[in-house]
Length: 342
Ligand code: C2O
Image 1 (cartoon, protein in one colour):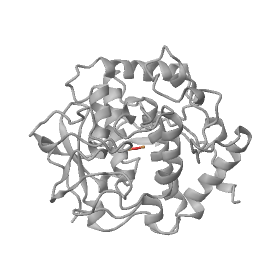
Image 2 (spheres, rainbow, N blue to C red):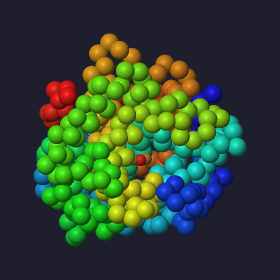
Image 3 (spheres, helix red, strand yellow):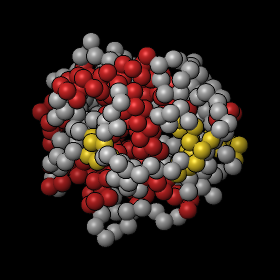
């Protein structure tokens, strides 16, 4: 049976997955017993998600204002910046038991929940920001690290005076350092090798190494599955590399390099917006090959989020399969990795 929404009233102190010790923070959400089955609202105005390196000052003024307003919400408001960061922690750091199998903890990473769960997470995050600034067309920016122009930390995130700034990052990786999509702290790559290697990494993750659905999505995870059955190509590769590259150069890697803290860095949402965009692009590249699982074990899996009105809602995987139906589109940019067959 598909995994169902956890009982959030049974949320417990989680585990720091980098150190394997109990977390020293509580990332459980506010409890509500009023849960609505979410229906995608009719799309009136499409939200536009721009490439972070191409979005101009006007866009960043709005985005920064929205993040600042989110940071100013009361601490117990489920839409506040910290509560939103904790949503990630709660679904990743083994705080919830699985609805149908209390022996197992819920972990939406390293398995086929990775793309749909994060898509919902960003969806509500974006709607909360849009509501705070009264702009129903607001879209999150994507950190376009699969394109050479996007392979540095986008400038506004590195500006100390911006609400997008986070001091808990590797200070050696501020611009103009190039983001290495095969980053390993132990053996850093020479800067002049990074761009071409990144394009090879992307070709592998998006084209060459993804014959079967599992290769891209990650392994099946249903009620009773132990956490981490296996990640898909993007999750395992470029996605994790960018987390580790951005976070502090310490074993526990805050903020970006650790699941419990990663949502505290606003760049997380630009990073994952690119991951989400790659999902859409990959589907487009599949042609007549299957793009989705047809099993109810995937389609009917569901999660809980607070929406932009602080209403707790239950959402399903099957509603994530088409981003336009969810009301947002991506700025089109070149895909230089596509012709980068090694
Ligand atoms: Cu939920 Cu990039 O991790």
